[in-house]
Length: 88
Image (cartoon, rainbow, N blue to C red; front, side, top):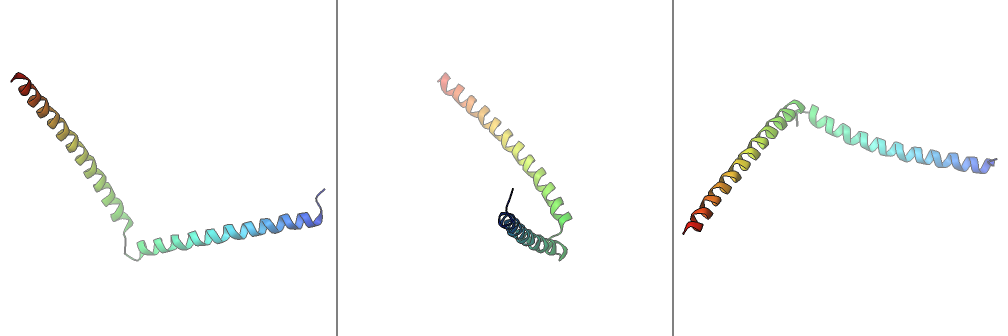
């Protein structure tokens, strides 16, 4: 059976642990509040950011496909050059 001193010690440690977690949660809440104020304050519009993100993702995909097509064209030209060099 646990002694009173052990029980008090365990409970005291749990209280300290709960206080640490509460302090960390309060810090996260403050950071979240600051970010929310930036959005609400007009510094950043979430809808505009979401739209811009979608535009950039689409542009990124287009650029990747163009790079791939360019690489294929370069490979085709190099193959042709190698073929012509081999014939000489």
